[in-house]
Length: 231
Image 1 (cartoon, one colour):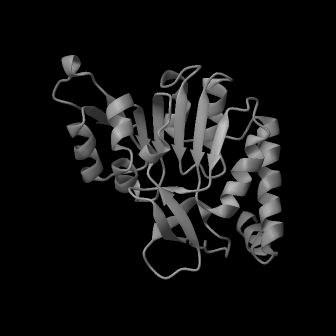
Image 2 (cartoon, helix red, strand yellow):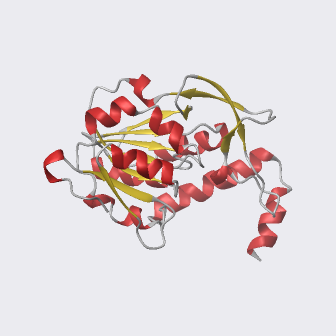
Image 3 (cartoon, helix red, strand yellow):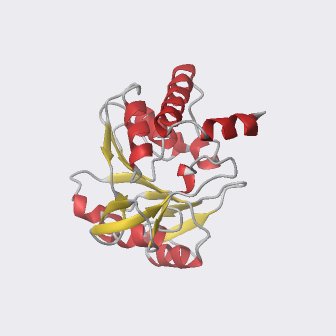
């Protein structure tokens, strides 16, 4: 039945599909069921505190963004980065329903340079657009987004946590945040299995761990005096 409804929905005009997604998110926020089921989501309260600043790269509709907002509170700040226009409009609408007005929304793609890049949004078997797996692409596409380096934001406050869900673009996101990593040593949640990313971050003094059932890798920075062989 669920697939049938999705196939029927895929035949609706795009603005109807968008409005249905917005209403679904609104209902979940109001009911307290707007959330992610990734293991890292469940331990965020042990990774950040009230007053922290957090960056959410690939915010999508804002599941992590909302939890970050709740945890850092009115004195904290969440920078939510989402390049896809349709999804950006949803996370923007959702943020208006959050308890705290502490979310800054950026309709750009984090990368290692400033410029314009193609963006591809694949389709599900039901015919619906799969915005969760939208990704930057060098191929032919009629959708383009602005790319920026996180370092170019020159943020005035230390970043406590950086979450990256960039569908394989994470090496470029990290290259564009070298100064931020060196300055703040934030905890990192990265959707990656890349040995390149792991080795790069270990070289910067991070340990890495994989929580059971997670698509992400959790990286924590260790000061020089307490570094061992790593995880």
